Image 1: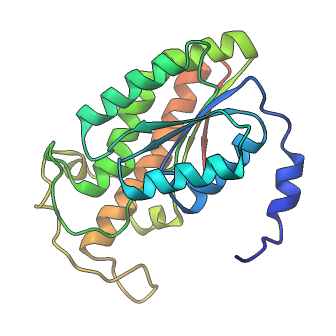
Image 2 (image 1 turned 60 degrees about the vertical axis):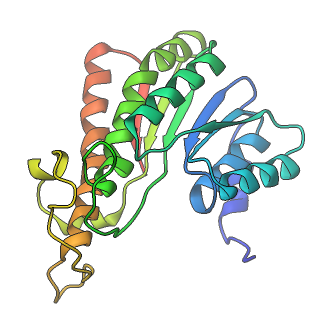
Length: 232
């Protein structure tokens, strides 16, 4: 395992998160796993939202071993199913009666084939954006509780520089047209290549993450609440 040149200093600079509850989607590996481990070590009650799998079980067990004193919960959440997202939101609400301090919408898929979810939407758009939008909407009252009790709450969306691969959001990618959105062309974003198929759909999802963040920020400012909408 490679040692980060910067992460240790960042970790040390983070204040205690004792008394806070933080939910993160997609914690089986990568940034989600590291984020979960970090906040758990800092004392936060940590809710792991993942699709049920061997990977989710093994990563949960690894986190428990790494952070034996941490308060960690597994919440089943399949972002490719709106019904699953709604059930997960109810579970998070039950676990967060004192409010939710942070929701980190981290989970995502990249460059998948042109196919539909059980709900009929593009698999990338539903996983990366639509389900996170639904989750945020259903959990919003918890952010209000946290903000009232502890001064602030945060919603963090994980975007990508791939969002620069498209110039504007197009309505068709948000419609029930999964499987009919450009096919499976696989050219990536290079200066001499026009992005194709699966990469255009991916770019739309990442642009949507950023646009959602900006619109939510404006909404919260109009309401004059200290619920921060942030994008990574």
